[in-house]
Image (cartoon, rainbow over all chains, first blue to last red; front, side, top):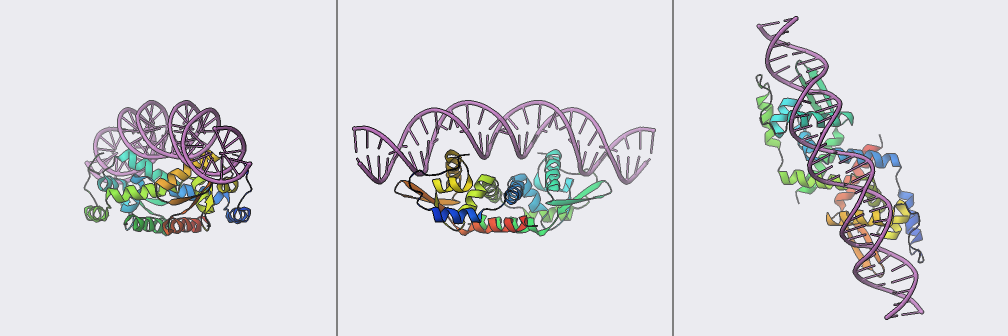
Length: 116
Length: 116
DNA sequence: ACTACATATGAACAAGTGTTCATATGAGGT
DNA sequence: ACCTCATATGAACACTTGTTCATATGTAGT
């Protein structure tokens, strides 16, 4: 948490000021951090990918991702808390789907980068 | 690691097959996971934001982000290992900059989502 | 060579995260 | 009411991650 930088003549006081002006608010960093954390786990990435074009229930997701029911349920819970997915109960099943296009966009963009 | 899902008649065998066909390779998930992990820490987000339009040396980044020299150096090291930033040594200083537009795009997109 | 400054790096530690296991909730059919 | 299936949830545990502290490396100037 040291405030200052170089002791030698600060070579770039102007540039530093610019950069400081560009700073975002803590809320923005926190939100972005949260959003990226959600999509930085490969189990959740698989879930998001599976839900990309359709809604699925938990047992469908088990079949698709080859993960345990508990693991999936825990991850879906996080994804729902952070509003990346929404759910709808129908009979014995709970169907999950992506809640908006934000996730889809971020996911697609990263996927394109992965192809290189 | 259970393979199957519901024991009751699998209501959506067709949809499940679709979802399975949409699966990506493990390498893709791993890469995306790694990329998102890198931008999911708020210290690194601050660094990336600071480097968005300019190159900066470590001491500049200390001044801008208000973080310790060691913390910044460690994070820069990770960002460099994963090729998100590149560095150039000039005299006593080491100047860091974003290595390509991938990061910028992902960052911007998330930032827009944060504004809502 | 010596000193001051800029950066890197290793070890240690606290905090966070994902999985499993066991169990709870809740709906449908009988 | 009872039983079964689908899903949720809490506790425990191993693992990862970010920071600090101490120290090393390396460059420039004297």
